[in-house]
Amino acid sequence: MLRLENTLAEIRAHGGRITPARRAVLAAILDAGQHHFTAADVLAAVEQAEPPPDRATVYRTLELLTEIGLLKPLQLNGEAIVYHRTDHRHGHVLCGVCGAITEVSEQALIDFASTLQRQTHFTIDVDRVAVSGTCERCAAAVTHV
Image (cartoon, rainbow, N blue to C red; front, side):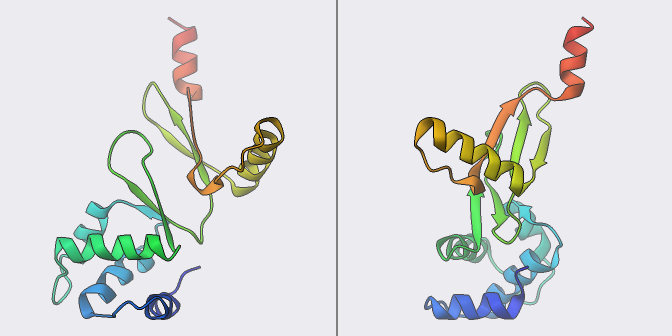
């Protein structure tokens, strides 16, 4: 699991500066207990920090964490980009009817990626897997119409 001091060390190792605003953004990301979030979620979480980081700082910090491999951005359903912490690997299945999003385990992704690689000779980026389909509830509703 990512920790604040380890993450700060990673940023320093990549030439980044540690400011109070950046520390607040990191704390919001790491202490929230969430492994994925939007930039708006982070902005809301840091608005009470002293001093509160501005919007640009939040976006630049998310960009930096993505560049150094601690976050992965993913656009799941055509809405805002969702950032995933790389210490919690998983994929998603998305219902095309109701928009429900369900997480898929890392092992299921590895198995899926392995099968696809054998069939297509593509190496699958399992951190960005999002498969569309129909959830059980919506499928049941369609069969009862």
